[in-house]
Image (cartoon, rainbow, N blue to C red; front, side, top):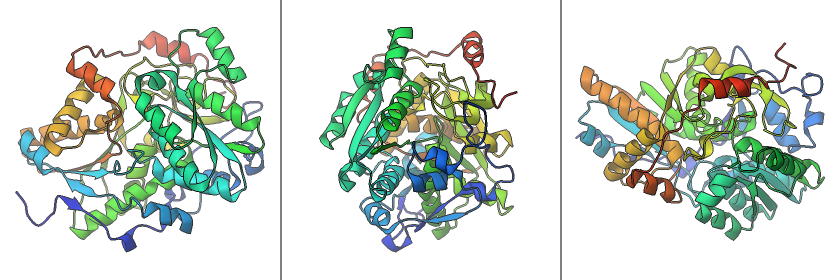
Length: 458
């Protein structure tokens, strides 16, 4: 076993990044603008201000500023749980008997249990600075809702969370953490919004989706002038805030002259993969380095691998702006599986454009194989991983086993963005061998894609 590289590589407090990196500044083909569902014109900051916070809108639409200063109050909050460690997975390597070197960035070392706190505290700060009373949001597996409830408690903001119904029922403990931090948690779709009532009328037995919950959260925000809507993934601003993950990873690797060959992140809306990979993609865009980057999505909700690159509604209720992304159609509702936060029908416009331009690859994996990898990781590395992050673990193990076959000692790095201690219903089903893999048919996806808006896709 190599001794010069420690199990955990930590930065010092003074080495925590003080700026976020905006990968759009280095992209040759910028993400397509958000457009109006009414007539297709590109939305201005002024038009978006009733939905999102003003400063966040400026970040959302900025394609030229490479670096954004992290506000001092946000930096102070970061110091409570950052820097997060870059860990050498020596025990996993030994169990796999692979010559590959495996590293993971562990973002689960905070009460929210995930990386979501990196953006929630920033968004809550900007809402407070604007003088708002509170914010609304949606959450899938619950990590984002938990993180936002913590951030709102810190800044004294009201927090209203529309939680995807299947997760609300399967993950009551995550729900209770949110309530402990003062959040109001509503299962979605609900009867508290007009959109929710319509969705329930059309699909009375639905288990919900992130698209449904987004519609309700946006409606709740735009009908109250003292509130704004905040989102934990997909948006450009979120990937900006999450870039601190990749920036820390870069610094940690530089300390020991580590150069990753393969970089892996799970892909649902984009915050995990985008936050980890963006600084490395920046190196590729600037011609400074080359990496193989893999986005891993669930086979039950395969936006990259089976979706279409097109303008689509970001929500099921079709009230949000249109974004150009890889999408399965806003009316697509995935099966009630345990992909958790990876149940979104679309994908980050930034990642969609980069994927379309060939800067990284994507693959889809079934949940039974994901939990098989999660179990092996837990038994060797001592961390019970979240289902979302376990998608990246699955492919990291697969790549390490390929190295075993070829004898190549490649360096693999993946983003472990959360713990799975609130996901034990899923682990129970895997252990009881009652877990079922559900993969949507070509016909189901085609039917959903028929509802793509004509505006922007003519």
